[in-house]
Length: 342
Image (cartoon, rainbow, N blue to C red):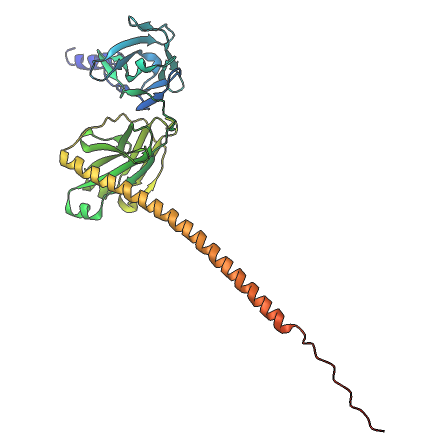
């Protein structure tokens, strides 16, 4: 009997779901949502590794310099319970297709600005999402989807160091809030292996970048590295990402449909931040200059081609006129007939 007790205990805990169960995660796919007065912005909170209808959800709001404040809690097929002073214009709605809970803010105004977090109660603790920053904007500038670039490590680094550094750049985007998430062979990467920063571009858009460090052994044996960008303009069903296959086909970048990671950003040392800032800033500047030079050359080519075409046309016209003048018949005066003496 004592020998069978551990086995019975394990079976009992497994049947109760205490062991052998994947911990659910919450993913808020949009780092920010921008709205103007009177609009009805929507915030999404998606459950990974489980079903949304299995949990009691809570929504919290945090403003700068203040602690999080409770807004509401709700369970599927039940009415929401609101905090004191919170109106019912905050409407939660379960999405069984996406396994998510969407929070709609009705008749948005400036008092609703803040960062909103979803949470569930699981195994005697709260699990929170990444947060979505809701911003007010009366700007006429439309949002812009990021341009995503993924750069492999340099050959010099692979030969001289025991690590490989990959750079992911999201540029020409608006608004500035973006999450850059990494995965190697489908596995989300350690927070300590990343660094992220951003800067404003002259035309009112933004550039952000993230660097991932992996061992050179991982690079040499071959792996599939993916960088995914979460942005307000990106639909979660069609993620924006770039991938590179390491090893034999090093540097072969292409898009692939993978999603569902729950990565948060972390900082490395200040020297590493300085290096990433200079690297990505110079890269964005070089890309802008290259684009500008390309269009200048294109315009110059069009103008030069037009000038050459016009010159050839006028030259050929003059040549035809001269040829016609040479081929015209000459008028010959009639010769006088000699007089015959009789």
